[in-house]
Amino acid sequence: MILPHELLLPHILLTTAWVVWCIRQIRDHLAERTSEFSGFTTAGILNHIRHPYYTAGVILLLFWGDITATNLILKIVGITYFIVGAFLEERKLLREFGDAYRAYQRRVPMFSPRIKRRSPHHG
Image (spheres, one colour):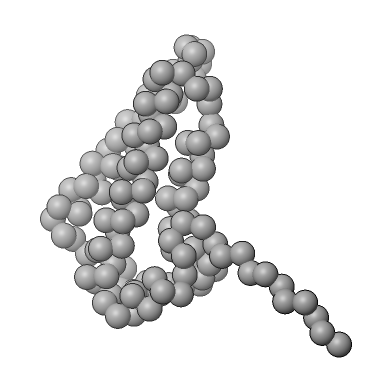
């Protein structure tokens, strides 16, 4: 699929921003930089899933656009990046927050929220 002329510039800008962001993430990981935040939160969606942004990125790539050779390569690279990035981030957060993050890992799933089954009401 060839992009219409009016979508070419936004596509180039978004792709460039994404590549720059990916490079920054890799550079920060290799330099073992800690996050700019002094703690982590488990409020909101983070109480149900540890990596909502990575999960959303994977879902977006899976269901967005036609399947062409180029798009398929982009999807594979992007999904791989999100999954590997989540695991690298986990390692960084364990170094940074230790046992508190380890307890969070045990309690909250990484990519998909747990579906709680309702127990039958007796009475």
